[in-house]
Length: 248
Figure 1 (cartoon, rainbow, N blue to C red):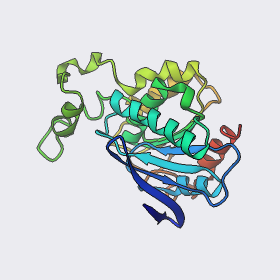
Figure 2: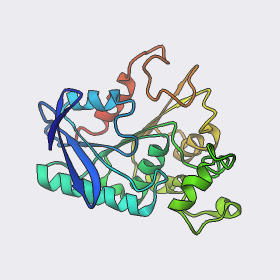
Figure 3: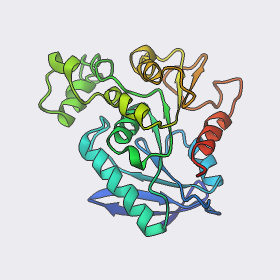
Figure 4: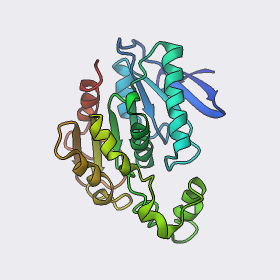
């Protein structure tokens, strides 16, 4: 079904029994890049819109869960390959992951590094001991009991420290494959603690120029990106990093 998304033509369809969408740039770039929003479709879309204006396609396929299961990673890989074949695009995509979308982006990249050009993650969930491990309270905040155990029914809370599928466990694979990443976080984020999540990835990259880290003053977990919560007040540093590392 053809519609418009933020002024760009898009197609909505079903892929492997999941809702999916692809958005087309007005003037496609020669490199055929696909920007893959990994979770929370439509949320904080400015970076995606700027990349569309630079000729990149944008796509999304719905997840079964927001906690980055292998099944969802495999679906993303099949989806990217499907889009590349159907529209004559590159299989090397640019995952964009915010919060739990960061978990999807990093685990997907770790499982399929050959499909990654570079990525943008923002306040990423990389350590399930922090999120949702600490969210075990009342019914409203019991993300662990309401969501996580449905994604990983065999794991008990006391086993979480030794859980093999934390997204951060993919860090060595990302480093070994020299995957460029721009990572943004709010200095006042009390939902996904940077020191327990993104900081671990920063340590894995060991000061490499392949990882650009942008801390944002006076920002909590939201809003993602740099608009309104940065002296820059636009997402140019994020967009430029992605363009610079995905031209070829």
